[in-house]
Image (cartoon, rainbow, N blue to C red; front, side):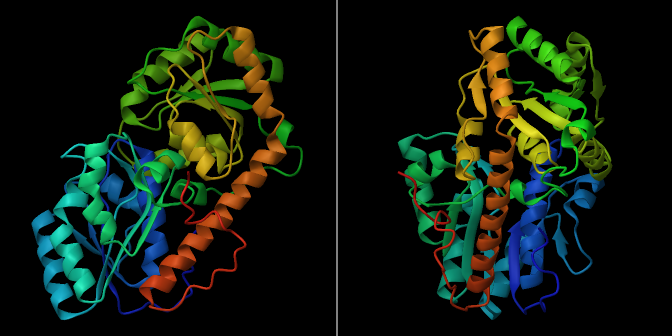
Length: 378
């Protein structure tokens, strides 16, 4: 999704953070999607901080973008520009850690947000989700939310917690194919695994189930690194599953992402507890299966926001047989899942239209065809 590059660029100054975890391809995907969505609507002022060149290249920064390394320089420029003309501020997408450090954007930007609203500008927050759900951080977020013209959360839990609208995660908007229409099973002969380094190692039942499922379907196993800190675990998984590893050294982000996407286009099933490994591979035509080593509901609530259910299970204490049933159950729902992906992409196009209407100060015409966008869950 490119955001309709054939539209004439408006004389709107849009300030947006592009900072993220430099070792995480998922962060890049989210920010690139947002920047591509905004670029046709105005001049982007993007704060990237001390990012490496590979990260910047993968963001797809354009020649007309104004890029800032200094937070102070970016912030002061935003204040001065807002005093002269109408501007917009767009929060970066992704996960908020509800700590004082994690919420620094949402609290620290309050003076700028207030000035933007006083001067008739727009504040937008789309594709954001919360890591925790404690009452006090929610209260601290309230002023920032109140100053926003548009707030759409990316998962059902955050929508209930923050009482805001709902949308699919921005990463559902990328990817070249939904599925191979001609002989998809023969074309896709890979099973990908990727597991978080900050979780326990998968138990023997998990390893046996994945290994035997791949063998029964004639699939080659690849363990991949999409987040640099998971690299050692990918190597261990490849060894224990009798597969190969696609490693990463943390540089040349765009090249590594393309290697991942090339592999995903050959993949039939992806087994992971990384949200954006599952989403990214799904958008390249692979079926996402979350077999977790804990009881987290993060993946389930993000896929639920896209209208997709039942891909996640906990392997904690689970038998090999139950894991195998889950893998086969998701595999047998292929048509249903790809219909869900198509609908999620349509809903992201609705979000894009809402942003365009807001920034161009035109009225958004809601046909009601995709009523889940903006709906408050619970």
